[in-house]
Length: 210
Image (cartoon, rainbow, N blue to C red; front, side):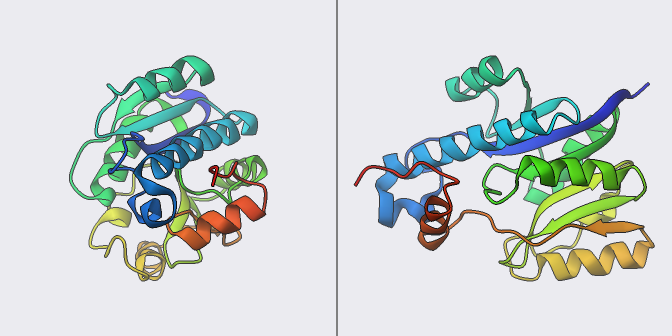
């Protein structure tokens, strides 16, 4: 039987210098970019906890063994799960398959979805009670959040991940499937130096020292 509440699944990568937030490295260096990656993950976990709509799960890449993830587990009271599969679509599909066996619904966000607030997650949780799916589009053509009550593997198949067409392609799929879908306001994630500067200016991140 599924647990009550809507689980929040946070996808994050271990904050390793040279492997985390690499597109920020020209501005912040490898260590600085990794620290921002860690800060983004902790911010996402706090936002998920403050939303208070259900248990929070931290889905880790490449695995759950990094001591940063263990500290997050202890600090935020989250459960750790390893991302498995191939591309991001396969990994998201697997996470939903796993989580929806245990919960009545699930929202999945990336740790770098810096514009998302707890109120957005609460709104998504409410919408999911009456809809098959809920999404928050991203300004770069992707999406920041996806929520489901039952597995929908087709949403994650045949998508050009990492391209500006992710949202439009996904929209075509859920329309073809006839899913009753709620769409939240468009936000942004943090990939590039301009995103970092914007998030700092908006008070969403603590800036790296110059």
